Every structure is written in structure tokens, then in C-alpha cells.
Image (cartoon, rainbow, N blue to C red):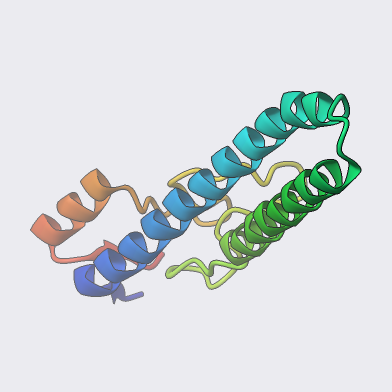
Length: 127
């Protein structure tokens, strides 16, 4: 067939890597917000001032919803990332959607080391 140009591969690899990093960051902040909220909201329940308690609960609820929506948006973008070789969703397959650097359908590798090898070879075959 043809070859996938290494510049296109490098561009797709950079986009995918940034998206995975952003997704990991949102997942981590979501988890930390949830873990931080549990003891602080339990301590807020012992506060004698209902206005302060309600403000703390509202602040954590807004933060939690913000983190949850950010996590959902980045996960959605990550699952819709198209493979440069086959055009299908890069990480989605019926039994696993765990993000890896390899396409679940065509086997294309978007890791930085694979992109460096493609640069040396002048591209990747589209077979």
C-alpha cells in the first residue's frame, strides 16, 4: 500500500500523549478531591455553625462536580481519538478500553520510541 509519513505520526503521537497525560491528571485530581472531601465533610458535620457547614458542603460539591466533569470530558476525548493508520478509535475495543500506546485494531504504536524509529525509517507501512 503506502506509507504513513513520520511527521503525521509524530503529530498524532504528540496529541495522543498530551491527551493521555491530561486524562491521568484529571483522574488523579478527581480521586484526591474525593479522598480529601470525605474527612473534611465529616469534620464539617461536627461544626456548630450551619451556615459554615453548608458553605463547605457546597464548595466541595462544586469542586467534586467540576473534577468529575473534567474527567468525563477528557476520557471521552481519549476514547474518540482516531488511529492514523486504520481510522478507527485508537483505544476502544469491545473487551478493553484501557489506554495503551498501541492501537487495538491495527497495532500502530504511538510511543515516542516507535515514532523515533519511524523517523529513521521514513515512515510506517499502511498494511
